[in-house]
Amino acid sequence: MKGLADRRAILGIDPTKRGLAFVFFEGGRLLDWGTRGAVGNEIAVFEMILNLCPADVVVLEDPDAVGSERKPQVRRLLTRLTRAAERRAPTVVKVSRLDVRRGWSARGVTRKHAVARAIADDFPALEVFVPRPRKPYMDEEARVQVFDAASLVLYAFGTVEGDSRAA
Image 1 (cartoon, rainbow, N blue to C red):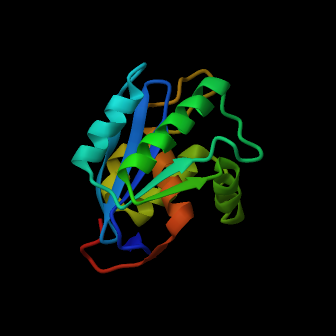
Image 2: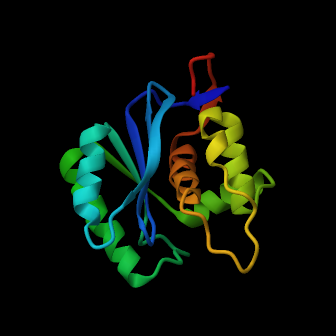
Image 3: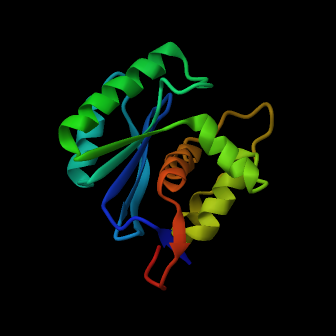
């Protein structure tokens, strides 16, 4: 099993059209994850998640990164989330989504389902949340955003082989 290379309390957040997806690591172990509905109230939900998962580091997507494909309203939300995180966490890390994709691509993983599967292989607690492969006519399942949040954290900090306590 693998754990996060950095042992600090790290919270990864990914905004979705339904709310916020998050993953929380502490001591290199995955402790909590999920999605919270927050349409129109994202900052309050973000504050609630931070209260439940007090983090030393918050990882968010960089809305100003070259190649960002986010719509303007999501970019503004990411900027507001960054400001809120800077008020609460000692460290805020912004990660380019394009860099995350390139990192997975270098490992031969190019589809969201395959990324989710690879993350679940490293963190078996997420195994039951791996969505089934999506057909072109299907909406993306909400739980896939948990893997998007995890991929931001994993790109920023990487994993190491851990002991059997690593989730």
